[in-house]
Length: 464
Image 1 (cartoon, rainbow, N blue to C red):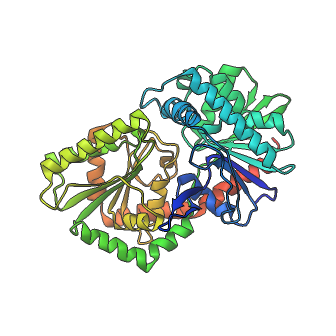
Image 2: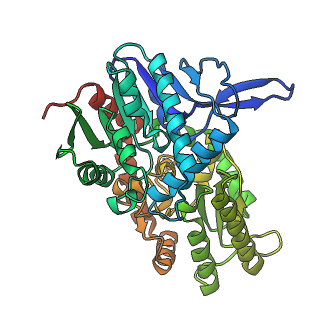
Image 3: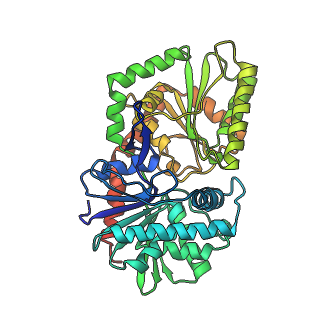
């Protein structure tokens, strides 16, 4: 692991504020995806993490968490609305996900995005010791690398994009797209989940900025910025240990009993987002019930939909549509006390998720577009019995690694239905071979390997 001091810059800090029964408030580690991914590499590193604490108003003073020093960046209500809900999640997010929903452009959103990125860059400049590695995370902070370089040219600056990066035809719709590219080029190393995302970026640098590129290197301002693919992963060993625990196995058995001990359980675990394909999944399941290819109570679908960005109109509309579809399926095919779909609009902790993964016969991960999708990897890691089957969208980054999954185009409803049945009726020996192969791959491509590969490339670039 690289030896330089590490500063992580992300939209959110790895903590949430909790109100105790006594009324006192305390900060606890967040269960979020980025936090879970980075947690294993932060232990004992003397790392600083810069981000937003989750509320509006002045930045709070924060304790260290697991040895990580935390520095909060403040946001006002207007800034949260324009920078976060606006440009980040109503402009960039839909456009980078193949415009599954129509992106919206407003000049005031862009102005807020610039202002907040400048604030994050200033905080990083003040908090970074000389020669530190600064690792900027994700689409919220695409201008930070160049802003930070102008303030602190002594730093090694990395950027990692956790979501997909679109082709030129989509990216160029953003009115200030050249500014975003220049912001990213402030990094010494720009990382993406897949080689396709890296190629899209290099093509855009040539087409929009006209800069000279050579393979994965870009000459800019008298220096070289490098581009690469670094597929993110999970703490496989920790999840294997959790899934093998007596408590989790007992919880999984109890979950099956609570569901009526059906022959087969289909499981979806997603953030409630229009990119995740939840509506397509429900429609496919409804048609399978209508066709008689699956029957209640022999087969049930459990859909966990974690609440997300509920102040954004797209997300409120999606929640209403999903809830109507669930109600329709249950009204038509469920029976008293025996629903066809068990819909859970809430968050689960790691132990509860591990039990769900262990209980499920078929994990259904069918996003319309996804940078990686760690749920697919978590399911595989939580099957030390080599049981279960993974149905995986070919449009998730994970599909390029988990090649033995039952891969599917979720836009093709008939193919989705056939693939769900294929997984449900799979020969146990074939399903076991698939699961063993995916588990072998993940053990050597875990989150520590991902972080080591990225940070080593950032600190010790290979001369070409």
